[in-house]
Image 1 (cartoon, helix red, strand yellow):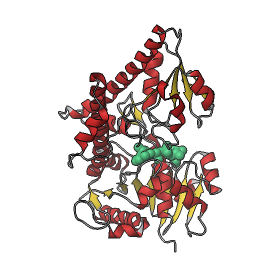
Image 2 (spheres, rainbow, N blue to C red):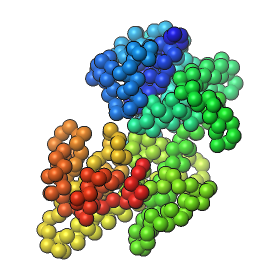
Image 3 (cartoon, rainbow, N blue to C red):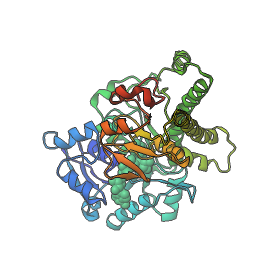
Image 4 (spheres, rainbow, N blue to C red):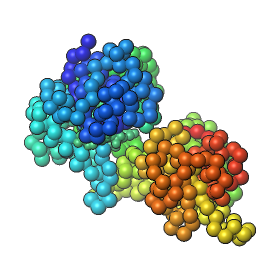
Length: 420
Ligand SMILES: NC(=O)c1ccc[n+]([C@@H]2O[C@H](COP(=O)([O-])OP(=O)(O)OC[C@H]3O[C@@H](n4cnc5c(N)ncnc54)[C@H](O)[C@@H]3O)[C@@H](O)[C@H]2O)c1
């Protein structure tokens, strides 16, 4: 069955889900530089928590997937027609931009073995990066395809994609043809039922957009910044209602029944967080360097203001306890993760609350059963829920859990709708 040879650099959320998707119809080799991850993949185990990824890996043979994990660049990249790059692009505060060094390291490794394949960058990159890097490296075989998956549903989102976007320069027919081919491979891997679907704009099937690379980069950063805007908007609404003593849930319900607004993605939180929204909004803001704007800056600022507000509310509760006679109240942080069901806590908003509370000299105890270690930034971490609930005087939870029902009176959360 296998036909196109495809290499994938990076087996995180993006790389692993794309690799498994494509391995249904193609010969895929996935490379990572972390031996533990490759070791797990070789045994058919997933390094990340994701139901579809786990299902695919444990049924590799029955599903006839052509998927292999390796650490050897020659094995991964030799003979590949496409090399997908899905390495991290963390935000670097010193350069005010994404650190794209892992993307470039992967490109170097591909080219050392395979000078002629198409490199498709799936990592999120600054607007203008693909054109610049093509020119700097004198390498015209670099494309960009933004990834829109959600952590926890990574492969599901690729099996049911909202859209497939691939960027290649308008004036380069060879690159346009390769981009179209790559889009076709992604589409071919999607659930067959998606071909019949009708989209909100009336079109049928999975929308495929062949754009210029810079437009494709802009699509990714503007999409994530819009999501951050929506989170920030409902959070600011919630700050207002909390401050003025209004029922935030009632106001949000009433606002969102307007069909143009919609009752989705409107649950207040301690701020937008996770790996992508904080860094992608800041990258877009950096891309606006020479362009007038107010809103993008406001979105970034709003997230910090929200965390200040939440931390103030926590400190109010601490001060009340001191006034009532608890000499040194202990603040309990319930989970470091961003959402319930998440398997990591990269840039989760609760960490911003912890930092602010600790800066006031208040001791913090963390309950995080997935954390291996005894301390997180100097705060004790426990996986013993009963002792956590007994010891903490105030419990801070970005997302509610029924685990907390018996100590609800101690809990501070803004998870009004108990979802997302
Ligand atoms: N996580 C998401 O929800 C998401 C969604 C869309 C886009 N993205 C973007 O995709 C990129 C990857 O994100 P992720 O969440 O999959 O990251 P991740 O940290 O889960 O995975 C990245 C993987 O790349 C590996 N790696 C690092 N350097 C390498 C190299 N030189 N060669 C091969 N492998 C290497 C790491 O060991 C790691 O396993 C980022 O740019 C991110 O912004 C992420």
